Length: 409
Image 1 (cartoon, helix red, strand yellow):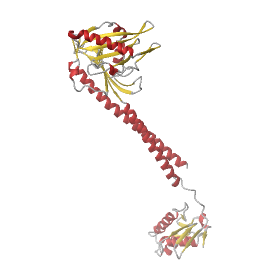
Image 2 (image 1 turned 180 degrees about the vertical axis):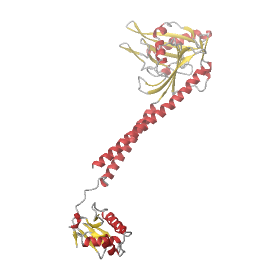
Image 3 (image 1 turned 120 degrees about the vertical axis):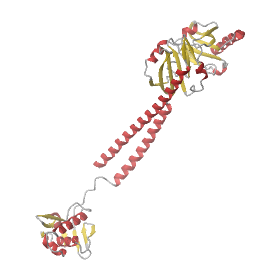
């Protein structure tokens, strides 16, 4: 089974190479498709958002019907940490807030942001044992003086509703009991702990995480100096995302912020998983079939049985080698050569003697006919065993000495 093992090993190696190359190609094609898609989205966002005189104009962005939906995450954050946009943030990627900044808003205030948006904002501290360990911030978009008192009451009331549904244990804030649907969709809110981590927030058509929010500018710097295209994992769910990052610049090319667009590539990992499972199944089935076939049809020939019997029947024109019977065409050169050799196995025949038995005139031109008859006869015999019956030396033909003693009359 030596050759069979080498053959099967070669096929296994080839299958593994094909498996890895196929998976690599599938992954590269999937990643490139996502990269091109995200780059197109980023180009669109650069056209939608402009910077002038210290302000950001997001009018075109707000009215753009091509803004990505729920399948994407979008970040636009300025170099000083102001969050222009943060749609569907990924856990662990630019998803923090500025706890200390939010604590400064413990009385309702109207804030006009650098995106020319007006918000009424209120923050309520979260305390445990006299220490502030978090903050609840509730805001209303484009408030009017006419209903300011009503807005402030709604902000404070809903901040306390949120507080009542939070649980605090050992300094850890949990929003497990909070149903965000209990808060009016006209209000935006978020809960942030003392470590700037956003515990919970809401998203609706009036607030796509655009309430006046800041993050540590060092995160923006890190994003700008990170690879422009990379894969990150959600720190909570482990889901993988492809991330494309570019600088947000003004008309002069000065870097004013960062744009980050992401898309989940979990489907690609699932596709690769099923690819591996499918290929593994095909590989196992192929190995079983090949092993079965090679067992039945070994590449290494079975060990040849030694010859014990050689006989030529002139009447039936059958040459017998052990259990194998071969018909030699009657009255042909092969027949007469086989007859002569088997009749006198120890004799060395001259070419002329054999040509005389063939019924052919002895000449140098006809000498080839004896040689050709020897080749045809030996070729037929060697289909069933490895030894030649007829041999030639010094232009004389004779029976193979190994077989001569086995020929029966």
